[in-house]
Amino acid sequence: MHYTVLAVGKARPPFSDDIQHYQRLLARHARVQQIEVREDEQVERRIPERAYVSLLDAGGKAYTSEDFARWLEERRQAGRDVCFVVGGPYGTNLERCDHKLSLGAMTLPHQLARVVLLEQLFRAHKILANEPYHH
Image (cartoon, rainbow, N blue to C red; front, side, top):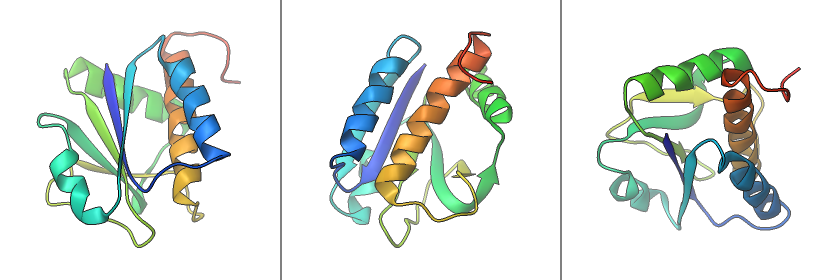
């Protein structure tokens, strides 16, 4: 499976270190491509052509870790790569959006949201593989 994390803004330490950490952990389970753009207006044209687009949005659907793992497995079974879009500080509107994902009711800094997303992707793959990590 291939994931794209398309984010407005450049990751900076300490978040960039955590992003690299989870990207390395995920490499054994899936391909993850990080794309950073400067402005919201650049997002739409950087979305991979056939990807299932999931926009991180406070009003989106929230999942438990187990439900998120099942949701990812459904995408894999459907043969769809997933592009997660992390917008800028004022949110991002997309013409093409298949799904809206909420990481919780609290507002997170966008760089931290990227770390949480990658950790949950890693956790989901561990859940699906019945490997220890998720308690």
